[in-house]
Length: 114
Image (tube, rainbow, N blue to C red; front, top):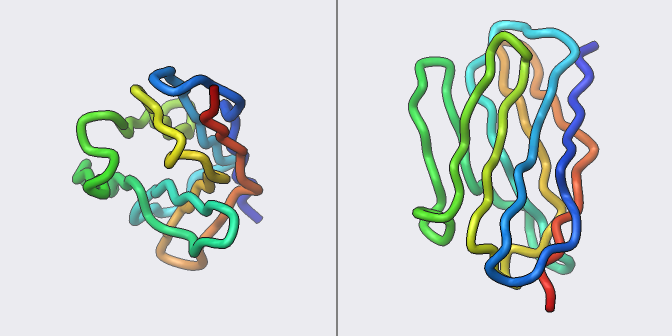
């Protein structure tokens, strides 16, 4: 069983920055690593992803503010979030798509508030 752990969430003022990390205990054959977020009363939505070939996707609302990157040697994917807005407040989840099952982390809370 692959264990997925997110970290880096917290409370930040509007305009601030956070860096989230997603670390897996071991690496299967990975198709894609993605960050999703879910705000209270809202559906979970994809915000950024990177494929095994290095292709990157961002949802329009975070383009120019968020950056997804990988450190394969450490089995880690990062999400650098800059110029945060209150609308970014959500629980952020890491999702790993493999040749077998998908794996999810427990989530990390990001709160953007003054």
